[in-house]
Length: 320
Image (cartoon, rainbow, N blue to C red; front, side, top):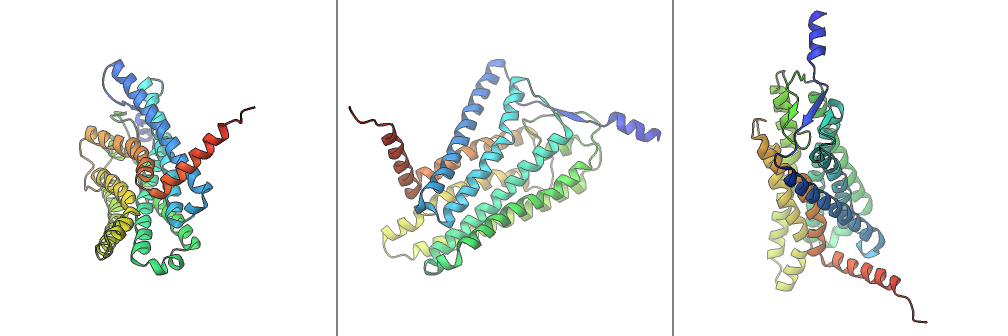
């Protein structure tokens, strides 16, 4: 009983998030940058969803998956940016263990879902370019909905295992996390119990989620590029490549940072470096995605031009 009392007294119930070091002016600068980027991320991804829903020409599996990705990005960045701004303002530097675990769970779950969604989108492009005559029958509405639901389900189920293991770790102090969010490496570093099994489970889940989805994406694009190179006309090659160039750009940006963060056998990497990469993953990438798809996709640009023309015409009043 005595040992239990001591354990309860020394158990950490909340953590302190340090955020970013620097002067007050630097903190204000970061607050402005994070706030502007968060606003643009929300507006950009909501615009993509609105465009797809209101334009019948965009009611295809490719844009259905894009809507899922945009919806995911909105919640992915919302799970960490408002809290990060509160930390920099100095009004919300503490976080309870329960809320910390929930933030970690949602961030990793949505990150895993994004990996699966990007793999599904690559498979969709593979069917469209390599099997165009059978595309409509292979990638029908029902199948595309099932693939999207499976991506969300697998993403959340995979991380449920890690969240359960981390919830059983003991934290006896210190309770300071050198980050602007609850990162799995930081929690492992602060635990006062053996974390070998958690680290192994993290590595295995990372391999399953990141590497397998990355391989599916890579194999799909090998077939896509091979098919595009066999197209005789340069105009045909350019048109085929334009349908997947935006997705390929997003895939490259996402996997380069995600593999660095999570596919490693040990959690003892530099936490400062992890913090920097996490900024790119949770703040920059969700902002870039809608602009990449808008700037590199003719159909989305055309739908946006039509929407703007309708909006401007709505403001025009006839002369009396």
